[in-house]
Amino acid sequence: MSYNSMLILLQEELTACQQLGTSVKERKSGLKVGIKPLDDKEIVLFFKTDHASARKCLQMPESDKKSCDYLALYLKDKNGSSQYFRVALGRDGR
Image 1 (cartoon, rainbow, N blue to C red):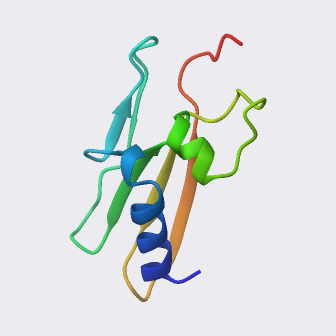
Image 2 (cartoon, rainbow, N blue to C red):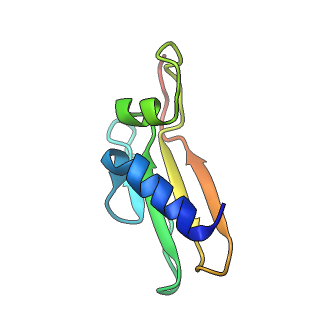
């Protein structure tokens, strides 16, 4: 999927789940993860996937209660590559 397509898809479909900034911190465990862009050609976005709207968008069955906590999207530039990371912080406890 192209740079623009992935960016538009995630920002439109997961807009309610997008986190501000380039790092996230889990409240219960205090664990934090982040990606620091090296220049203005890099884009870093975090989306909270352990969230009702994300589950609906990602077509996760209601019975499937376990998921990664966040999706991190790293985009290098319009002509470069993109990378996706699933981020799990803390313990699910379920």
